[in-house]
Structures are given as structure tokens and as C-alpha cells.
Length: 470
Image (cartoon, rainbow, N blue to C red; front, side, top):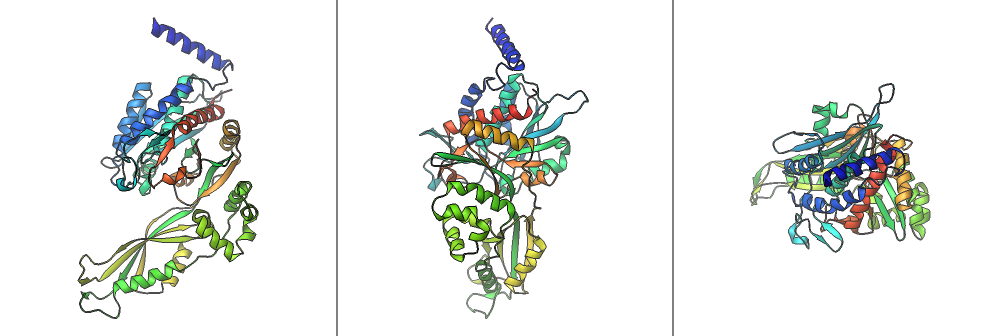
């Protein structure tokens, strides 16, 4: 009898939604928002640290939640243990048999390593304390994934007819380049994305500035160019120092790289981002952000920005960080080869081949070769789309906040989709206070309980606004 009454109530809710009486925003989303907290806690306990990834464990967990909801899904391993999963809510075609371009809700299952010695809790504990859910991946990106899932399930439960397909996609390997995840799916299962026009992924979120909030939506990112340097020299015994070795050559070349400041280049998306953030700055920063092209002519301003806002400074020029070094395996052996790896990031308007020519000239040593490990192509997503307009609308409703298109210094899987001409935005339905975002790839990564709940409700409203038939 209870089940019959429940079914009747659900039918009445669907009818009310279809008649516009509930405006598509009350379809039990509160329950799904509450459920998000224990589900994220459990998700964080699952070890998907990359390397090695073992994302199949996350796939198993997400599969059970979809099974419980009665939603069909598929999964595939790109290599042993490297799991990926996708599920779809079907839209309804119009009278001509067409559906609007589909939307993908994308997150990655893998997380970066964490050092227990520097955390106040176990990084894989999923502890809920002091109003936060703690664990590696809480922000990057299991928290986003659970928000996606809960809004996706609420939409499925709402009874609303959709004008487009909505896909929930969870992938492997983003933290190492995405080649066993999003990149592999695009290459091996292109059918999944055949009618996709939009992707919502990590890379942007709401930020609080005192009592004010701004929602930052990533529309492009610096392009990674990962390089391996190999220096050659004569091997020998450590007891007989040589005039020059592979190691000393490499050190000299790296010193030149570390002392090089690449030319300042204020691209339009970066200028637009700084201008949008200007009202939230104080003192001289307000005018400097509003007139960035003029401000960067002052070397003192650039130095201060590098010291106080290195992430912002990195958006003004190409950069290279020396991240790994490798020499001899024995302390008393001078190696024939020494190696280093550089994490270089180029602005989207730069030519990688021209950059490599410049880098060779900076190093200025014919015994040092440069090998490209990884590099992507640049792309920028437009902001004059129906999805961007929907983000603007829901940001005003949920947070009273404007939307600022931004450029990311890091990279995400969005580039795979932008290469296909798919509009991709970095957007998380959360708002972070100063300091809360520092846990990403750092210590005590955490997501606020209320932040997560409101994020589910906000994302659900966005999906309704964007995909529900009037």
C-alpha cells in the first residue's frame, strides 16, 4: 500500500511539473542534496590514487549507485584497472526528429597522491568534521562528480521531458594527461560523443571576496608542453673530476632556463578575466586589474604580482618549471647521460615549435637534446552560447553573483573536447572562501558540507533551465 501511495505521489509530482506548477525545481532535489554528503564520504575512501589509478574501484561504486536508481550505464577499461563509466538520460526529439546538442557532465575518478604526514586526517578517510568532508579528491574532482551524479539522478527522477541528452561521464587518468580516460574514450568510443555539443568539467567555481561572490567559468587554459632534456658527456669515476660532464652541462642549461623571464603577452581572455575581477580587488590592484595591459608595463608591478599572486602572473607569459632531475644511480659514477624534465605552459596563442627554437637558443648547448613528452593544442570556448547564458542565470539566482570567463593556468580534460569543436566550460556549482581551495593537490583537501548540498541544488536548477522542455 505504501509503495502504491508513493507511486501516486510521484505521478502527481510529474504532472505538476509538466503543468509548470513546480517550475521543475522541487523534484525531491533536497533529498538528493542530503544524500550527496555520505556518498562523497564513501567515494573519498576508495583508493584511486594515480599512479597507478585503479579507477575501476570508483567505477564499481558509481555503478552500484546507478543500479540502485535503475539507470542504465556502460563502462570500459582502457588498460587493466583503468576504468571509465558513462550513463545517459535520453532527450526527446522535436517534430522533425531532431534533438538539441547533448550535454556531458564530466569528472575524473583518479586523484593525486597525498602525504599522510602533513594531513590532520587520513587522506582516504572521507571524514566528515567541522562542517567539511575531508579527503584527497574532495575538490579535485570527486566532490564535483557526486554533485553531477546527484543532480543527474534528481533530473531522472523529476519526470521532466528533456530537449537534449544529458550524459554523466566519469573517467580515468586526468591527473596524468587523460590518455587512459577522456582521450581514450574519444578515440575508441566516439559514438558516446556523437551528438554532444557541450561539456561541463572542472576548472571554474564561485569565489567569495568578503561578502561578494563571483562565479568563474574557465573558457580556455594554458597549453602544457612537457619536455625531457638529455645532456651527454664522458662517463668516469667520481674520484677524478672532469672539466665538463653530462651533469654540469645539464646544470648550466637549467640555470639559464630558470633565469629566463619569457616576454609578457596579455591575451584578450586574460585581460577580460582580470577586468572582471577588478571590482573585488582593493587599493591599486583595482585599477591595475582593470587596466592590465598598462599595468604590466611597470616591472615593479610584475614582480609584486609574481610574489603575491604567482598563478595570476603565470597567465601573462609562457613559463617553464624544472620538476625532475636524474643523474647517476651510484654516487661514485659520473654518468654518460643526465636528464631533467620541464613543465612548460604556453599561452593559447603561442606556437610550440617556435617556443622550442627559443628554448634551444636559451640552453645553447649542442650536447643537450630536447624531447617532447606531451603537448596539446590550444582552443577557446565561446561565451555567447545558451549554456553560458544558463550559467549566468543560475549564478544570479543562487548566489547573486556575476559570471567571469577565466583562463586556467593548469590543464584539464576539456582540451580533448575543444579539439572536436565541443563547447567546454570549467564550472563547479560551489563557492570557495579564501584558503578553502588550497587543499587541491595540497594538504587537508576538503569540501564544505553545505557547499556540496547547495551545489547539487544549483546544478540541478541549471540542468532544468538548460535541458527541460518548456
